[in-house]
Length: 515
Image 1: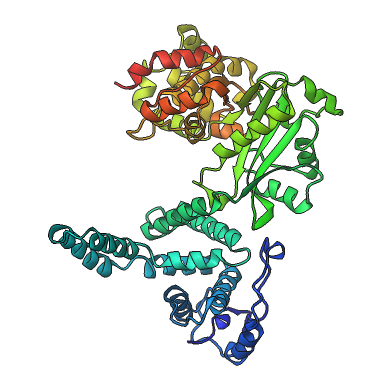
Image 2: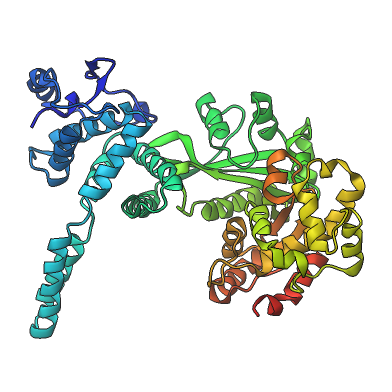
């Protein structure tokens, strides 16, 4: 086959030469076998050959297919060094492509190098026949292994080869981020979704035992601090001063780092040390931190107000382990901290509310949401021509500027807090017992208690757009975590701490929500 280095066409010339450095490569140990230089020399003439056909996105599909086949089936196998170099060239090709070229690369990989159907069907028949006719357990075990191998997608071999390269783990994470970006607008692409799920499972396996917990400070490498702003998805980082404030006294940031990429956090959490459970995130993000470390000695609460991970690690459960490790570190460092709470968003609340406010709901409000008669009347008074509190609510939230009218804001509070409590406590994901809200499901599954619904918890544009400004606290009561987790996983029971009346009312109407 022609050389994999001759696959990319950019600006009328072939892209060859030394591969571009990827994050973490300079911190990894490269392969240095004696025959590497000889191999590159033997490929020099081949590298100058033009590809047979170049697509509009700079990708030669025939050459890519041949290269992938060589790596996956090891048809040119001459030892780990040569296979590693072919895999490296495949990665260099991928990184040189534009967004459309990468999609074409991934689609070809997911469709043409999935599990071969014919082989799996034949082996499945043979396995069932061996179970019926053979009394030899060893033979059945061999047949089962062969069947299992035939059901493994062929592209799994390529992913394993990439992971063996210096910087390969980080490359796989970025590749999966590209997959997820494509899947967001192509949810019907089953082959791509299957490949993304396979990568997620591999990443989970690779991560076990390879993560280091580190505190990130203002004195950490600039590259690491820059990544905090790049991956922050909950409360955007606006400037270096913003980052410095979040890393100052009275604040903490911890991250899990993979040993192959020791300067780039895979997942990280921001923590504020406060005197009480915080109800408003702007008070954390905009408040000037204490100027002396002695202020931390009087804090009683650790507020986890943002947890983020790299996009390619979506679905990999790292936040749970991170919170538990950070709690242990803070307890050892600051024994005065006795409460560990989150200040969390409700990212799907507004979208759910828009769907809930159907024409039937506007005409006749359901009894499942406990809104007092006084609260209903006060809200209706703020919306001309509205005859029900649900119609008044829709009129207000669809209008502009309601947050600037204090009387409307006051009338909205009891209604929206009641709806928020109902949403968190009673709205489930499909027919399961899991909470519909992904953030709620994450913390409740980890054993936290639902503590408080906070009106005007996030008054930023994003907070108002996602949840009308609602936020909530989840309380990690250390001696209840295990029991809370077991009950939630078993029957969806939601543990509660504190005395929020709206949460209590939502719990009291749970039986109505099930009707």
